[in-house]
Image 1: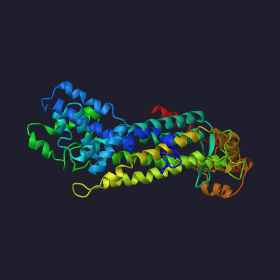
Image 2: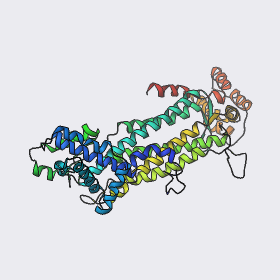
Image 3: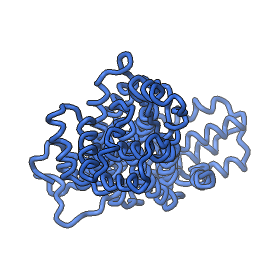
Image 4: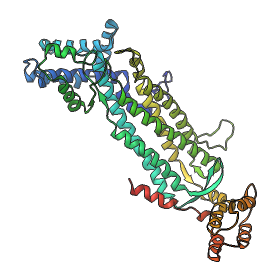
Length: 453
């Protein structure tokens, strides 16, 4: 981390985003381009046998990608300063290496029949696939944590709040499992989402390929190259560029999970402010520059802020990258270069929320006090029982008794005693009911979640 870093991604949050650097940095992009060019060259020579190159010579080509390092990337950047073209610079770098290795006879097979986006879109597809794996692993770890809390607090009753006001009780565990279910849906989508790529030439029709080698089944060849070499799903219906449908699909899933994360962060922030959770203290930490008593929920606030940034970028990318004038314009290129930033902000968001969770412990006394102080929450089951028993105007009578008023358990018992049509067995059941045991099937729903995983 440098205090002169322009972006927080490799500055303040550099340690958090470090796993992304090898993938999405300029170095990462160049390295992936070299890998794609080398694999395409090998495929042309070895699989399609379009040249009578000795197989031992072909195997030597791997040295170029296997030994690739930062100095090589800088060398390519120097070439780019002359060519003013980043992919062409990679091509020239590889050709120079082949000449040095005594393989100059095959150098013109480098970048064979390719347009720049053939190399770029595959590189970004590989990067997307790797980034997706990191997101899946990180999100899965987060889900594990909230599932664990759901089990731990499965039967702990808690007063709900609708519109911020006291409402029908739930359990702490059930509220955690609600979020686990929402995140799990997106995790499943991300896991199964394919990553598309294309290698079909200047306008997507294999024009140059077919002109010089009409006997080759180029559609099948490109499918084999993409799927077997990189595990990517081929897309055949393109212009010069990949239409980015799979990227948009993945980003939209990430947008939804980021929105759920913000919802979770805000709820946790609220529960902390209500005193339902206590935050563990860390020696040496300061909560406020002027108020020594404060322990702020900064991790959830940090997560919320960074997820907001991630969403704004992902929303733009997911829409913009589906659009290109005629057979291509260059607006996609500059936007794609920020793909790493998207994953960076998203990763910071998940990891900080996870960090915040790790600092929490339940404050059962405060939760119990809220339940005890709001006996009017039993208006719902009481009026429901009155309906079943054909009691006159059940809702309206409970409303008159409880709405906007402070009542006690004794008040409710007296009310129940005055009911005319409710049978005694139900009256006894109503008088025995307390707010903290009026949680319905909340605990069972936690179990149901795990049974359906």
